[in-house]
Image 1 (cartoon, rainbow, N blue to C red):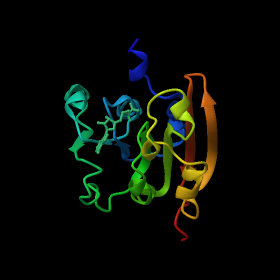
Image 2 (image 1 turned 135 degrees about the vertical axis):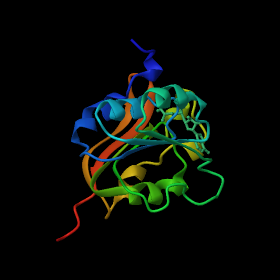
Image 3 (image 1 turned 180 degrees about the vertical axis):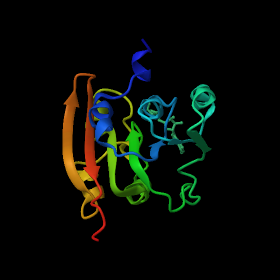
Length: 175
Ligand SMILES: C[S@@+](CC[C@H](N)C(=O)[O-])C[C@H]1O[C@@H](n2cnc3c(N)ncnc32)[C@H](O)[C@@H]1O
């Protein structure tokens, strides 16, 4: 069994079967624990990180994994242009100026699965910088008017940590 930090989050595992066929974006993908999950489920996956060396072993065995090396916080343009995805996954990462682009990157009928640390986590250690901690209700505010919230949780976990997590779907365009 892989080490715990290579296992998918229980939140992402729970909602992965709801993501419709089509490409999945794993933003700030790290070593690709969620990229691997969605590749195994048959999705083409685009993984973005400022360091992609940790993703190369996965790419070597999965031709449908696209790696994009990009600094998401450099002020350069969003590295994915106008591309949209059946699933957008973000875990343990926050750069709040990206939130609108993240929501826009969800295709109609697609899902946003987002889980990261929130205010209060500083009691338990890192991250403790408020720039990396969601404010109360911030994920709900980020999707308001754009996505329908299917599930949301906020608070302390057994880790221990303080997190917010959301699963939300973009309505299909009116026909
Ligand atoms: C805590 S790790 C989470 C990785 C993965 N999402 C997971 O949950 O396993 C945060 C990731 O964000 C990436 N990251 C941090 N700052 C970044 C930036 N400015 N641009 C792109 N990626 C960044 C790091 O390289 C790291 O892989």
